[in-house]
View 1 (cartoon, one colour):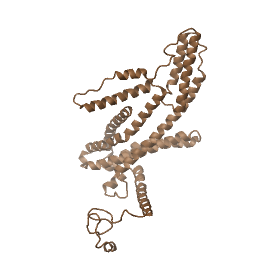
View 2 (cartoon, rainbow, N blue to C red):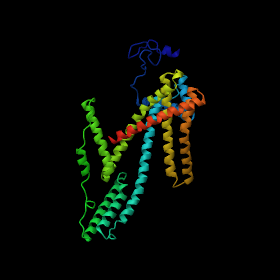
View 3 (cartoon, helix red, strand yellow):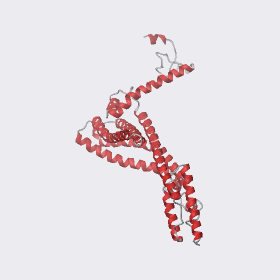
View 4 (cartoon, rainbow, N blue to C red):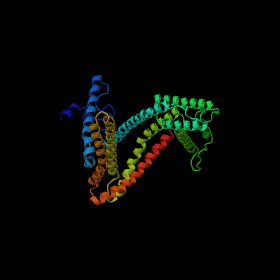
Amino acid sequence: MKDLISYEGALCANCQAPLQGEFCHHCGQSVHSVLRPVHGLFEEFFETFLHIDGRILHTLPALFLKPGYLTLEYFSGRRVRYIAPFRLMFVLCLLSFFVLHLATDVIAQRIEHRHQRSAVVIDQDADFSQAQTAQQVRRQLDTKLQALEATRAIGNAAIVAQIDQTEQKLHEQATARLAELGAPASASTASKPPNEQNEGASNREQPVHIGWLPAFANERLTEFGDHIRKNMRTLKRGTTAERREAWEHLEAGIYGALPGTMLVLVPVFALLLKLFYIFKRRLYMEHLIVSLHSHAFLFVSLLLIVIAGMLNTWLRPVAAWAGYVAGLLQAGLILWVPAYLLIMQKRVYRQGWAMTLLKYWCVGWCYFWLLLLVLTVAATLGLAH
């Protein structure tokens, strides 16, 4: 009653409707002005942050530990204390792929260090004095170059420079030994202009032409095809720097396309649930909420699995028991994913275990091929980057 009296006779600044509280009942605009001191902005920020933080504390434990609970809460109309399903799923999707990207970089660095030690060993063994014929020199050179081949695409700047120096040293020593034996330097011991063969092949590429597509679509497909072929050739036969650049483009393209392509699975998965539970007479929006919460759980599980795997990798050299515990935790998280989804499907749709297991297997089989298709599309878009 005090609030009604305090706003009696006041009009909304936006629509001139009589005010009955802090917000206009007609247009929803707040009575408070945006022109306020700086300390007022900080107060509003912390109030909003604490409100969101409170919803996180209510949402994430229920999402991860109680299969189907969050979905049933939404169906019952208790939604204010939880984060909205789409926002929850989207944020967890971006966060999980970001951490997965970091884990991929860590694994690549470990492989680089391993190949760096291999490159040092090869560099120390770069000696052709034992070869007595030109054929032995060329065979030995080819063997050493093939040993360096695995390090070309994944080396960092320091390793790339070392590999280039090693290759140059091998070519120089092989050429010198061939000169001592009185044999001419062959094409395998001489340096070739980078990507000379690739450029010639690129000039012979045929444009894509599909009759029922417009010209701009054919041009776009031709451009995509050229990028894919160029990146594939570079990854196979390019120089060290070119392979590293092509791999970075592929990685950036895949991780850039994954969130968007994964979002396509959400409504498709909801459609699968609608088809398999058509006699339950549920609205498509209900199946969509189930799909959003299921994918949110998958993303938070992926996030925790990747973090546990990184802890396992880091802790094993310094504390084997801690790494073992992290490995057990990772295995438990992996096993919890299918069990959680099965229990969630049982609690939400309330069918017997036999029918639930049958539909769970059918939905999972269809989802597996859809996921494989999405990952293939993401990899293709990454190659076309």
